[in-house]
Image (cartoon, rainbow, N blue to C red; front, side, top):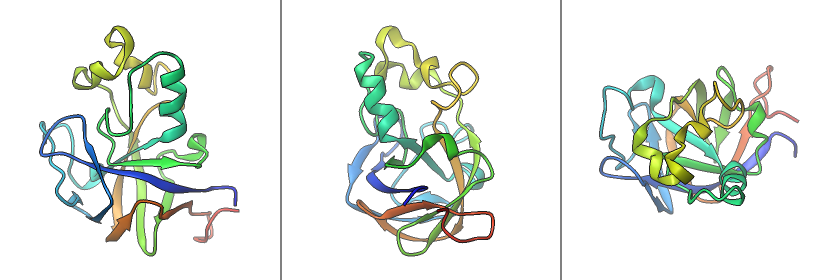
Length: 163
C-alpha cells in the first residue's frame, strides 16, 4: 500500500541523545512514555510531543559515511517504508491500532546531534539546507500504545488511509 510503512524502532532517553530502542511505548499529548528532553524549552511540549525520522534517510546518510543510527539524532519513532517526501507539516498519520498524530513542523538540528555526522555536519538534516531530509515534530491527536512493527499510514484528505 502506497502511503504506508512500519514503526522500525521506538526511541527514548532520560534526556539527550542518543535515544535507545524499546519494543513498545504509550504515546500521548505529553510525548512518548519514559522519554525526557535535555532542553525542554526547545524540545517537547504539545506541538513537539513526538519526533519522527525515516529509516531510509538514515541508511542513505550511512552510505554517505555518517555514523548515524536509529535514535542517534533524537527521533522517538524511526519509520520504515513511508515516502518521507509526503511527511510534511499538516499531514496526519495513523500509528498502530489507534494512535493519531499530526506533523506540526520540521525540526531544527542543533549541535547535540553533531556526533552522528561526519565532521559534525549536523546541518545535513536541515530542511532549509537539504529539503526532505529533516526530522519532523508531531502533536498527538489520539493517544495509545505503539509497538515495533506497527503499521504507519498517512491519512488522506477524507480521513482514511492514503492509497
